[in-house]
Length: 113
Length: 115
Image (cartoon, rainbow over all chains, first blue to last red):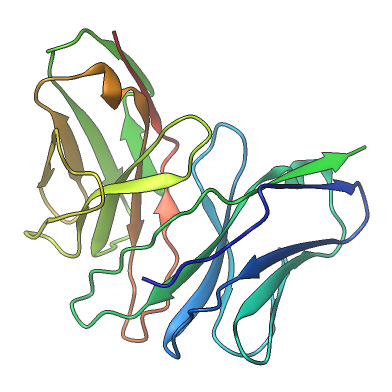
């Protein structure tokens, strides 16, 4: 399985943009890039995913490098509620539909008021 | 919709005791999963079920059994609890679709302590 590398922790000021990096140099052509986050004492929640093009949704934006070996999750205006662990995950379609995903340790994002 | 529900929220067991963690989803998803999360760590997959009637081992299946009772329910059983199984257990469900693009929806977790 292709692996991802993320910084252990990051800090950002409230109301400023946050760029969370993820390296995935062994990504294959059929791997999707997913981001989940886990708020304190909660289960993970889906944030965004992409394949090749940049993606935007109400929660965040995902910028994918042209060679797909790295990606960046962008929170446009961080709030205290965005303090969480953010996981960058690669997923691959399986003909057996056994769609396992592998969580790493993620990046713990601290938001400073 | 309640989404994914788990019971109980908290449990304390003595070494050697058995228990079953319950999980149910009301989103008509085909796939369901059990993960454990140890302090300061990411989630590790214990077992998953790609569809009703099928189950498969994940990364850390030893010491656990599962049952996919029907499409809605997926239970995790500890036959003889050990202190190493102290963890937070999360159940999740998804419906990948033909393109393999999917979101997993997670329950609130069960915090289990084995003494």
